[in-house]
Length: 153
Image 1 (cartoon, rainbow, N blue to C red):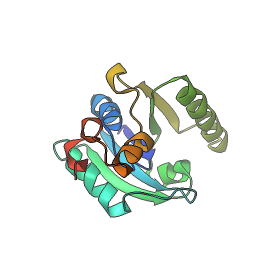
Image 2 (tube, rainbow, N blue to C red; image 1 turned 45 degrees about the vertical axis):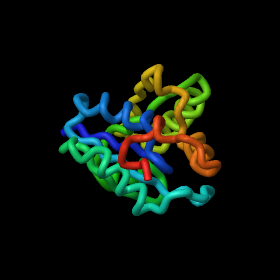
Image 3 (tube, rainbow, N blue to C red; image 1 turned 90 degrees about the horizontal axis):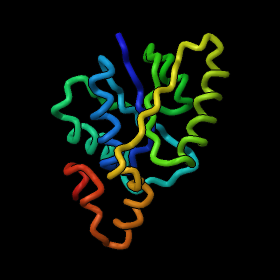
């Protein structure tokens, strides 16, 4: 079974995230959207809110599930017996950052059983980031064009 983990903080999930998952659905038997806990981050939305946003966004996708984890993504993948990490790339800076993480993960998984799969975000969504959305929400701007319906609170 081909299972991918799509890790992130999803604070909140954006149309860019949706784009990546929607396009990856035909490639995998199951996709686990895994909300990681980053000790360095202060979150705008609670873990439960983020899980609910994602569940509602993908309610019509039977092979997409939501989970959360603490620690290293590769340890989470091992615990779920997953061989693929799904990541989206918006720009060259994302590529350099994600390449370093993917290479580190390959080094840490000496058996090379966990592979990172990159998808380019569709051009119309490549400018969207959760941090931009949070900034717009903070200053009471119109963020609704950047997030799935479930996030429009």
